[in-house]
Length: 309
Image 1 (cartoon, rainbow, N blue to C red):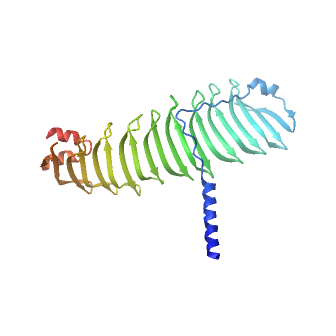
Image 2 (cartoon, rainbow, N blue to C red):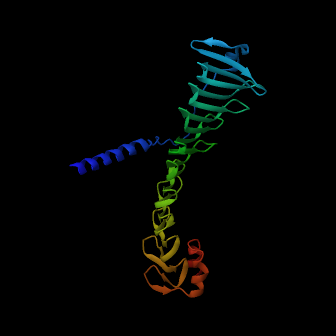
Image 3 (cartoon, one colour):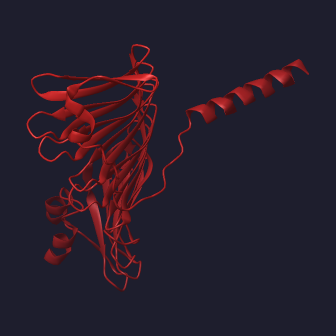
């Protein structure tokens, strides 16, 4: 009974730990979302640079060589939104939210030229929790979640010009776990990571859901059979990998799935044997000079190779 309770307790702790460390994945959004932020105009908050009392807070106004500063305080500590305005054009440059003297909420940076936001950091009890970047249209073009000083969660990156989604990169306490890149609103590359590539990597033709390549990885190196497809879904060729080098058969195929040719690799070098199959299945050995001339350029040399025969 005691052993059973111990196991149950460990299971509960593991489950709770998983819940604490987990980060909800944000909803897939194919276009950058516009941020609606309207900081008050300088004229509305400066009030001649005089300090004043507002409820239980003191509003302190000061300036230095470059900015005007408006600071709310409560019990002698910053509490509220501290704002800084550029002295040359009176456009807002910075605003930071404080609670009881500690950053808690959004801290935003605005451009010198037009006062548009280009970066924002969200704090919780003084700890950075998220970093965002924006383009001139106010669209969020990058979002990075943080926890305990490390990236944790799903980073999202969008095009600065078009606002289209470029990639989503998942972190677990600073370690890269999964990457998905996008092209014209569709996944283009998907990688499983654990600090480096692991598992099956898939590539699709841009803007389609048609598979282009599958590449298996193990221990950060290519391991297994790579498969490549044309836009019609026909298998073009396969390559066998072991520990990052070509090791074993490489084959190309006709559109009907029949083998077109086969060659063998050992330690990333082509073997002396290679075979060509005509559409009827007749087998013909490839001469050594032709084999050596094209096999080193594999797979790009495949088409040229067979046109030369």
